[in-house]
Length: 497
Image (cartoon, rainbow, N blue to C red; front, side, top):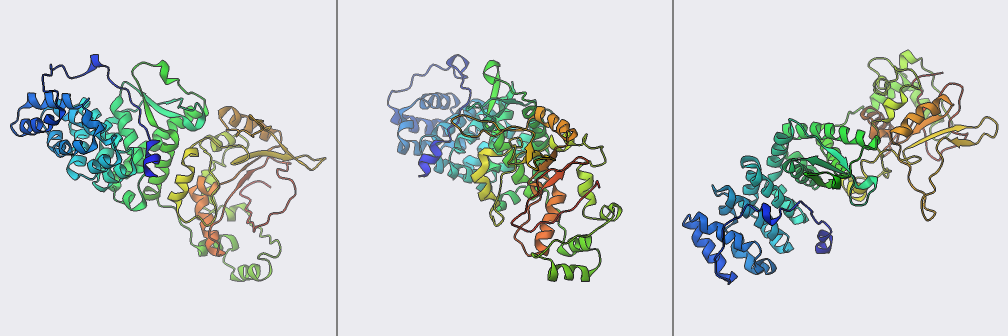
């Protein structure tokens, strides 16, 4: 049920103590809470600012919040109160909106489906004093605890305003730190920031809404905004990813005035992936271009391959490196992107440090967003040994494969994943010196150029998709043991003899 699902999506935020409250008026209103609405209505339209404040203060702890039907008349006044010239009234109203949106799914839906309320909250984020912007952001995040609430914000184009506000407050600097999460493992790491609650709140609501969008909703975001957000989040990701690899993670509970995101870094990784779909359209090589670069200009060679070798027997084409890596060829860009001009094995750390885990995906998966929903809790983590990368060599005597890293036994006999952090990445360089091969899968997700070649090959041979692996083998060494594959394989040697 949606109610059960949404109940899991609890928000936590730093609450003000009574001593910090911005409300100091002595309240002397009748104890009957049913009279609050007519009083508030009269005060609102008679411009009695002091009475409006008293009513809103009395309303906050009111039993009305346990009675959704009695909240409905109050909700009808929210757009007017949010647009009040009084910062105190606007801020207090935003707090009430947030509290009301958590009362029930019905109230949440009614608020999220009101265009004036949504637009007023978004406007407060960007045009108001900082305390009002914080209250409005908190209200929007409370609305985001349900799918109906998130869709309401997207429908009324609140996301565009929130992206603009986020980029404005964080463009000068975003001193984010990686912090331990609820579960204390790498999948629950969160972003934290010191002395700047508004920035972390805007980060959360923007990322949450981006990760709710379908492709049509993403395309509605103005191009300049989506591009700026994409570049900013990539820069932020580079920083937290580096902290993760170096295990530079803070215990946020030990810091004062520290605000912790409610979104794990998996959510940040997902939002970057989603934005990349509309911001950086994939490079495309036609099947004719791929055929020409592999078989040169000889149609007879390609025809001979299809008739006599395809799915039947091996076929070897020899090309000099100057021909294969010619400036306008499809393989030269791959060679350059891998920093292959560096001496082997010194290029290993530069290749591995920017990598993340790429979860296996079936070749006929048509809905990438559906796949993201299934694996979102595991996105963005460092490469996992054996799933993403293997460091292996074949023993010259036994002809068996030998792994450089030993298995982690884990608890209860369950094999624990080994994440390749910076200490292991540096060991990979030493492993190459000892004759080990670096074998990395999922290159079609890690390199735009490799993805273009893989798609071109799939089109050329009528396949739904093609995967790509890369193997970096030291001189006079053998990586994988002799074996056979149960699928067709195209092998291209980029450099070496």
